[in-house]
Length: 318
Ligand code: GFB
Image 1 (tube, rainbow, N blue to C red):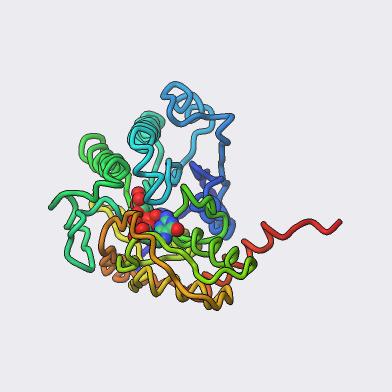
Image 2 (cartoon, rainbow, N blue to C red; image 1 turned 90 degrees about the vertical axis):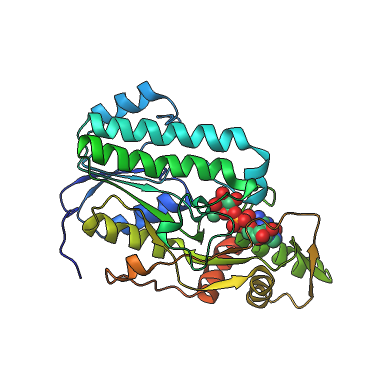
């Protein structure tokens, strides 16, 4: 295990985006560090406003920042709101990074996404694949913003000597996910649809696209653990992939969700919907070399999220 170059004990740590699935997992994980966790709700601080971000940062003076705030969504949300995905994410990143530099923040971690890589990148995708080919059109707007975020961290490190790092998580899932069928990612959508199909006695669970794309899934609590680990020990210009190391086709994922939910019907593909990137599996050897391992298997993780979902939708007893 590498030495702790940036201990969090006694520090003021801001989790930007603490109400989101990733930010709330970071807050849970940071509860095990002896640090003070800072948060700011959207009503208090709009991260797209430079003056507001600079004012908040000057008043609260964090020692470290996890930049988990972002406009996020699944394949359809990305495709339908290109301006929001590009504008919101560029501004959030630029404002927080610049204010962190101005207020002398000791360390900042920017969270990106595996969609920064070319659509047809070799698998598993190493960090070096960045900017070696065209992006997947449905999420190019989000990808360009996240690539700009990586470059911001690198640029402030080079020009100003800031200890700003970035990490690229694979497809994530977990408690607090978005279950809206139009804007969500695939896993919460399948859990919701399989549950509804079970209750209504439907003959099939409908999935978008051909079912052949392959994705890698990581539980958000594993992600938070990896982020805190890297915050302690990693201090280099190059971004770091964070993945589980295993991928699965969307069709097999749907079968797995159906098993967990106990939906016994079939699976039907809606081929009018987009497939997106054919294959996304990260090469996480750089992270593994630091001694970190994920702990939550996909089946167990889905069962946990399904239990949370059932609690959310259970009708109130009257
Ligand atoms: O999770 P998802 O929306 O994101 O879709 P991406 C993954 C795959 O699952 C695609 C298929 O091939 C979808 O067509 N899929 C099947 C479904 N059924 C469904 C469904 O009911 N809902 C959804 N949403 N998908 C996103 C990017 O790409 O990944 C973001 O758009 C971000 O920018 C995120 O990078 C991690 O993996 O295709």
